[in-house]
Image (cartoon, rainbow, N blue to C red):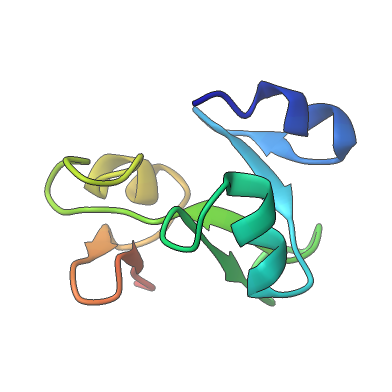
Length: 87
């Protein structure tokens, strides 16, 4: 699945194109399902972003693993929530 087209509409690319969101439903629609990405509010100054759900230590069931979360400044992947963990 490719998200390259989303970058044209205001998303940013960090290994995969990230999209802006106002609510979880935006991420579900943009990423094609309810377990693919999540809306992370209030962390980035550019706006709320959809981030891919993650697995730890590797991305076996989701697009991201610990390394992808760490590259954005998080403390790896939280295996219980499948979201990047805050340091």
